[in-house]
Image 1 (cartoon, helix red, strand yellow):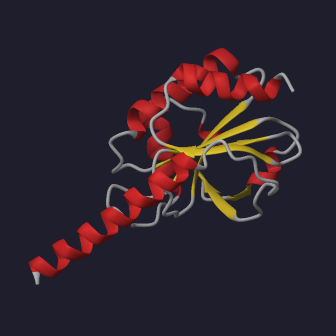
Image 2: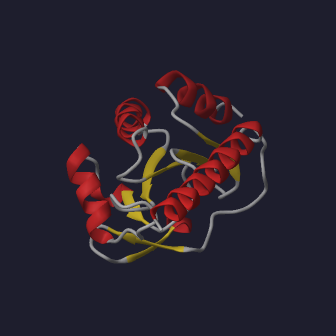
Length: 167
């Protein structure tokens, strides 16, 4: 039984790695999808839609408590928010709890916001199987300008954002 569970875990891990490679290969592809109307949960358990942020440039960073890259990515996002927060909104979406594939709740978002001293209005929760960390940049009209996955440093994110802010 343990061997079967281990095999399933290995298969899931390999699928996620393949998805990560595919995301990296298409990370600079601009798509025309608008902001999603999927519902998210804020730190107080209220339903939030991403279209509520329309009218602003929006960088969405997907994270999970179990993700070892998400901690340093969150610190990078916080530093960028201090530097660029007057030009763009930075939003974190928690996709899982400490247990892989366990759906997050308001408490998950609240704990992450408290842990990193983030603006609690900018941390949401929604279950997702995206390869983490995962990033989306939305235009003020809601169009996805950039999407990609992986651990990005400040310079990489700043250059992506600045490319679109200048257009």
